[in-house]
Length: 111
Image 1 (tube, rainbow, N blue to C red):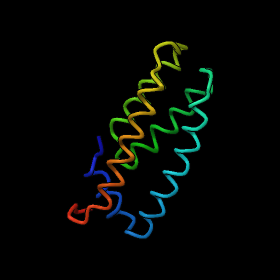
Image 2: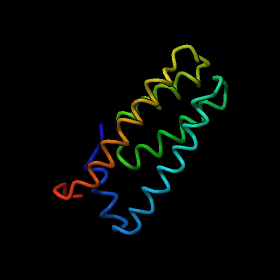
Image 3: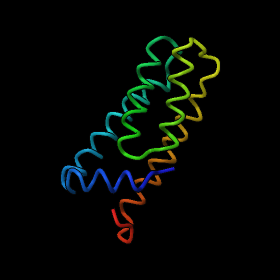
Image 4: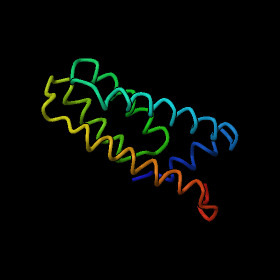
């Protein structure tokens, strides 16, 4: 669910302090966008929202969530809103977030 190699790579690239800031910004921005998606009627704006979420998720190693965002983005680009499973996407984010935060707290994990 989480690409821990990507997480470690990012943390090594930018340092622990900046990494913590990136995590805070990521969680805040994604929560805002997901709040919008929870009540959204599928339309053309959905594609850009899923694109943003996909890129953010990839940056922090939220692998499964990013794949579902990609699937939704592709379907939205085709206008195929019926085949976008926002529920699964939102669930994947919630599960990924829990795993990610637990992993950050696990001092044994070499991040």
